[in-house]
Length: 455
Image (cartoon, rainbow, N blue to C red; front, top):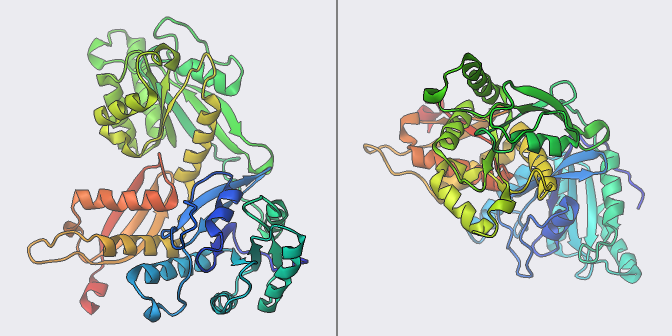
């Protein structure tokens, strides 16, 4: 059907529909990876998931939601159904474009009509995706859904049939992408102990020997900035790679040049949006690596770990065993992606580029307000902290107040009622819901007296 939708107000696309129509399958097709769990049993997707979709030179944010079993929250048979409905409404509120997924083979059901009414009331552009249209005969059957007054797009996520045409139509209604990295490139500091392979890694990324590489520890004495970009066209992300001197133990720093190298390295970590900690696989983590991680944590920078020179260790242990031991030794890495590779040989360098791009999205992301509040509220309802001196924590409202790093202000009745383990729990829930691996999260708890008095 010809696209008659109005221009979307932002580049966020939400997928909604009743259970078991193929929403998560569509999400995975558009995102290009198996992020959402796909299963024949209805109701598998219960939490909202998000991913950045990259199509040629364009990007947009995609939101997956659970299946709508009830439109009336009071009629929901359990708290899970009610929570899903809240999540869906939040996604609709924040999205610029809605993909309304139905099942062509099942035909138009009463619940589909109820969802259509909900979407018409929202006033957003809507594409009706008639999934499971595996052939031309089923394409013709999808005409039935035109009764809902939305443009109909027959496709099959199972056979990847018609997904490309839908993607083209989606890009056609999204507004222009604002690429702040052109004027404000993200800064990536490549850090580690001397001779871990930092300069070799940068040379491998940019494919040009812009940085001197030597087996002699301490070759890089200053922090060097190298332009770097991921992607092409107007939406390509622009970076400044900062090659740093290996951070030495201050007690062993005797020469003035080494002292200033250490200071510049620490300064590079402080100003970085993302840090890449390069470890030597043949040596394992040292006390210096723990010190570097503490500096990264203090600087509130995004983080990726590259276990370099893996070819020297792969015959001794497995990646899984090494990663498990590394995370036990360095607890701060619980949310940080770890990659194994070889800067000299090129092993896994493509995955490192993808990781840089993904973590850069995470540290720069703007969390949609409606879904942010519902994710936190659902986390609070699922697990609330213990009472303190007869008082129980109450959570009222949350809003994002900054990025790079992501800062979220949460209004509560008393910040003193938020223990550190509970703050970590909330951060984990946010990372799982929004896909924020490697990104620092700063939660700021403010007292809201007026709301507390009314409660």
